[in-house]
Length: 285
Image (cartoon, rainbow, N blue to C red; front, side, top):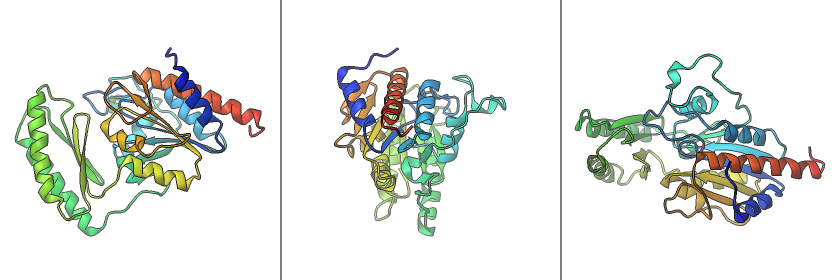
């Protein structure tokens, strides 16, 4: 079990004593270990139970904020099947109830609370072109492991299954050069993540979603953790009694850090316990 530092404990305690609190979490690399098979990951049960508990406490919200499209995010958040087994091989009982959890997919462009955005006709045409170009780049290096993930509002060029870092870099640069021209003068944008270059038809990111969620739910404090470069947008909008936690050892704007998915699960569990104790002491529970 991970033993949090005094700094982490103090930050969690301060956040737990907020009038209204949101625990928001990245999914891949934070709740669930990374896997070359993107649909063979299972969230840490301790972490998921903590977020589910959050979702059912008063004045408290639990959210998953991911670059995955919302349909895949929901399927993977619900699954309890074995780590490393593709979700297609799961049985009917390999699911959990995640009702009450706010799901924000596509970096916040899609959400199950009605806060998502709807593309216009021009953006839909842009998406079609981006997808065609992404496939053309991947097809230029057959059998390399590079693959394309089509999303409702964007497209990702994945290199997680590749064993050639230099070729991965070259293919991502080739796609970036195309996007620089294709997206000029449009609402589109792109960003790099871990072994992925992701293009979107509108400028959205996890930070923008957190800012809107703070207003929408009248949240006094947000606790957010993530492992990827795309999570830096979220870390940068946090302030005051908010808590930002980097999972892993790469450079970050987050104030706090834990080593891995097991550690962040222990942190979430500790926060859920602190929150329940605070609400009970104040007669809310």
